[in-house]
Amino acid sequence: MRKSSIRRACAALAAVTSLALGVTACGGTTKNDVAADSGSAAAGGTAD
Figure 1 (tube, rainbow, N blue to C red):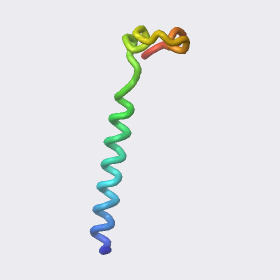
Figure 2: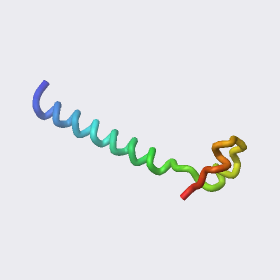
Figure 3: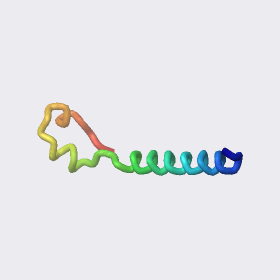
């Protein structure tokens, strides 16, 4: 592999990882999710 293709592959991997991290961070718990759960752990849970 040439240096340019390795660099391009690393840049693509970094972009995909950043996108996945951003999507995961935006998928938090809402107050409605906590209220809808009927489990015992949800009774003490709070949401931002």
